[in-house]
Amino acid sequence: MLKKLLSAFVVTLLLTACGKEGEPGPQGAQGQQGQPGPQGEKGEDGTANVISSDWIPWKVWTGYPDNTYRDAVYVIPESMLSALGVTGLREFLSEGGIFLLYVLNDATGNLAFHPVPSAVYNTATGEPLFTFSWNTTVVAAHSFRFSATAAPGKTLSTGIINRTNYSLRYILIPPGKVVTSNKQRVDWRSMSYEQVVKLLGIDD
Image (tube, rainbow, N blue to C red; front, side, top):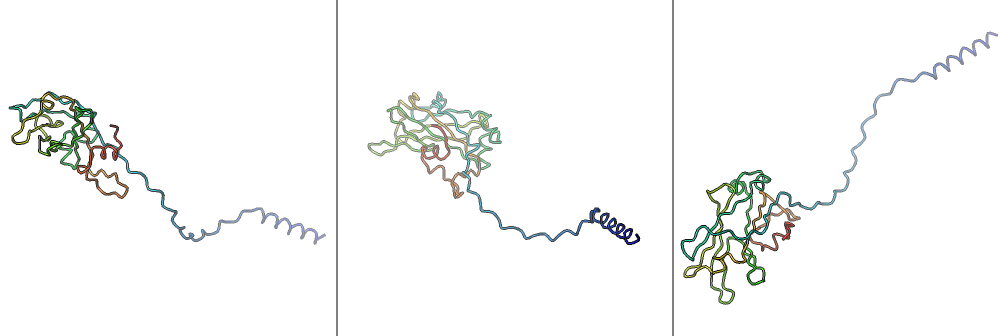
């Protein structure tokens, strides 16, 4: 009888001991860091914040002492400059922004794009006819002056004086804008109009 009681007592102790959860063991050592994963594919460089105008018909000339010079002031909408974080064209340029200006002449039906500044030559003789240029103005912070000046000994053509079939367009490129895959800066002024709009993805 005593043996039966002792056996029952031992079994009870074993069952009770097995029912209790033990204390958590010490935390194991941290494993070694895994190998870095493969590098992702290079993304395309964007053209965010590049702003361009539509083609603008030439405005009425305001400066015309004679038939050798004409100029007019054009205003850039303040909303465009505000989108670039500036209030004026001079501020934009002083911070390293790029201002590109182009003249379109479709008088003959064959589109001719001229960067500004540039000289225009007689295609037959090669002699200079006139130059296009631009500069900032004191009229308003968000404006620029566009001008046409005849070559020495020449006068401006009737088409230029009458602003026939001429228009202009400007493009504002923020400071440090890089669009090449190898991150090299672009020499915008050495490129043709067609090359610039293609690289920037601008609709013509």
